[in-house]
Image: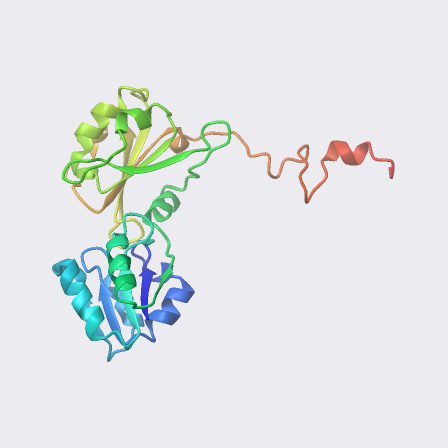
Length: 252
């Protein structure tokens, strides 16, 4: 069995319990060495064979899987495999060759970054939408960033910080210039770094950060005092009657 395991954003303790249990019992490990914290390998069997996929092609990865197809293989991906995980092409080959696999979700860096920023991505009355994308340069992106920015929703860009100036120039066409923006470098790692500002000054502030960072844009970064209705005593739902309903019930 091949297990595609979301290794989390960086902090080894953010590996899920299920991922940990499977990893420690696998005889072969293929991990994205350029992004996955190598400390996570400490959870593996000391006798496991380890391969760094950052130095391998898809063909070479498949050759390793073929060689050990009778063993349990942990394919460690950074964050969660469903976000920019490049798993589709691997799955296609496994299915073609009849090799069983399972996907184990992980904690995405988008949530580790939000935790470090101490912010909720969906703020009541401000935005209930999160757009997750990347800026297309070497890799084609079918969605147009300028069109996406027209929503003024919470925006998170992966794999794009190298092009920060170009991105900011595009976002200014729809977001107000004073819109807050934060760059989170290596979210949850020991050397994590956060740089915050607005669309007006972030390029100058974030100089030098060119990889392994997320870009967060939107008013959710402001110190907003709006409140969710979830715990509002005047708001009823299937689990709780509102204070108004209680005061007007026939039982009182």
